[in-house]
Picture 1 (cartoon, rainbow, N blue to C red):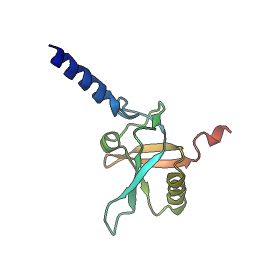
Picture 2: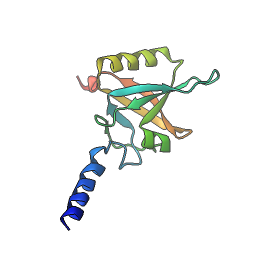
Picture 3: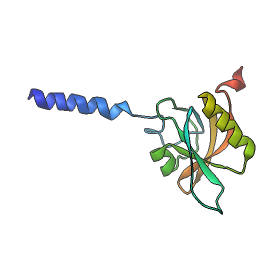
Picture 4: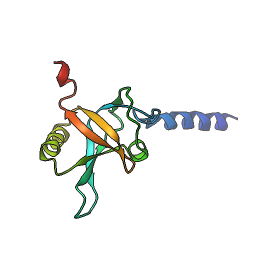
Length: 126
């Protein structure tokens, strides 16, 4: 009996340990996060790249943009890597481990696209 209770308690603790900001929502318009990394598909015709949202530090505000299945499952947001200013802004925030505000667009092929970035987070209100 004690073994079952211990196992059940351990399961309850570990299932919530990795909950992120996108796990229990289906819509949002803004995500505040640090960038965990970048991902790019190997293709000569595609300029789509992805940032990996840091699940441990992200916060999502309410909004009406439906989350794509890939964004919700993998914590990836897509962007056009040919947009040099956007790429450099996110790379600088990644290097400084800065929180950024991301406004997102509806999903394309399962992943939401970044509309614009505000860095550092909350800069609009300062």
